[in-house]
Length: 89
Image (cartoon, rainbow, N blue to C red; front, side, top):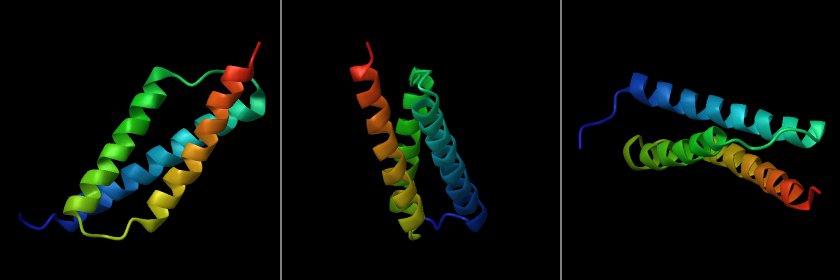
């Protein structure tokens, strides 16, 4: 497989990071406000981020420790969002 150009890797990495930050902010807002719900498009974006990370790991050969750490932190928040939804009256 040909090497993935730096610009492509950089943009993909940046996009992944920005999407995780966006999803994290969405989850924090829901938890802090006590209002709002997790939307289907947020779930879709979450799956797209995980897919992009998987592709990046296979093809870009770069350490993704920080991105994976951010994703884990986001997924912990998301678990709280779902728990809050289940406990709501």
